[in-house]
Structures are given as C-alpha cells and as structure tokens.
Image (tube, rainbow, N blue to C red; front, side, top):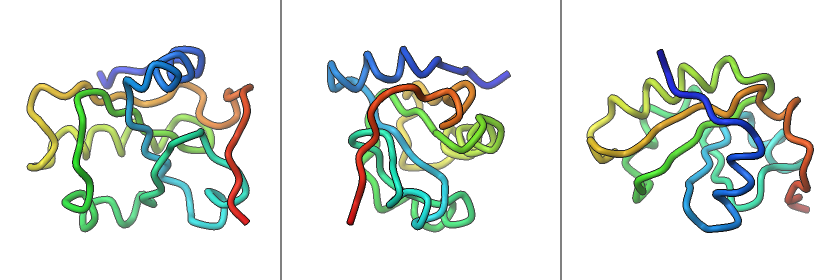
Length: 106
C-alpha cells in the first residue's frame, strides 16, 4: 500500500523545507493555484520527465482528489533517478482537502 500524508503534514514539511511536492494536474490547473513550491509534472508526462528533476529524500504527489497521485507516487518510487531510500507518498484527499494558501501564476 502506498504511503499517504495529510495536507497538514505536507504544509508542515513545506515550512521546514523538508519535502518536494509534485503536482500532477494539468498546467492550466497548476497556474490557477498550487501548493507553494510545488513543481508541475502532469501524470501523462511523468515517465518522460522524471530525469529532469533532482529528486530529494521526501517526495509527495498531489492531484485533485488524492487518487491519481497514489499511482503517480508508485511510478515515481519505481523510477531510476529517484533515490532508492526516498520516501514517496501521496497527499491524502488531494487539492480538495488542501485548506491552506495556494501560489498562483499569472
């Protein structure tokens, strides 16, 4: 079973700069508002873009409702280039459960 973390845990880890957030929504959705510091790699692009990122030790995937991010986290955990000992998780409830401030792009 894929590990899930709550939005509160994600927010706490962002504040301590202890986590990488991968937003797997479309670029248009990402621009309308995303978790601060998140990077946008849509789900369909994940396999071909995984090598673009310098992956850290704590990675969490985020999607609209917390379902497709589970699949994305599984994919990331299996990719070469992602450290074997990295903690890869899905954000429980997705953006629907995120009650905190979002960053916006113009």
